[in-house]
Length: 130
Image (cartoon, rainbow, N blue to C red; front, side, top):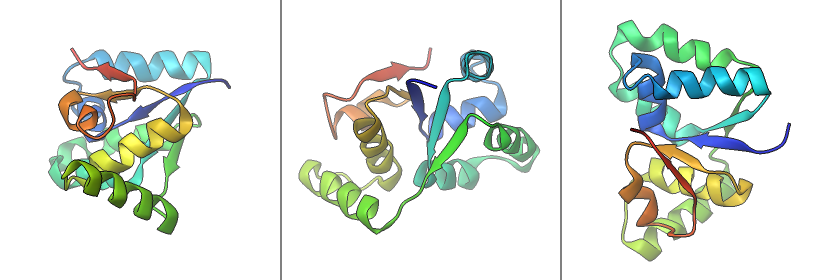
């Protein structure tokens, strides 16, 4: 498995709801090609906080896929994310951890909110949702 994608909260929500369908297509293509999907834990928490209960099972499907890995917000990641937010004047922990994960892995971040990530790091590659 080489390469992958980092999914932010908007991408997780899009997968669960099927809107836009792009994320579901991306996920199933990743399954076929054995491409890793990294889910930062702060983004996962944000997605759970806004998803209606009828979408919880769909999000569970994504989390149970063998290609899905959770990037934990351990003390080191918390520090790096926090410092990244402090530098930019931001306060969205989810965006901070997604940006950090994409930066560390060298993978594109899949997002419907590209401005939030670009504010933190203009060098991170963004795969914007349609």
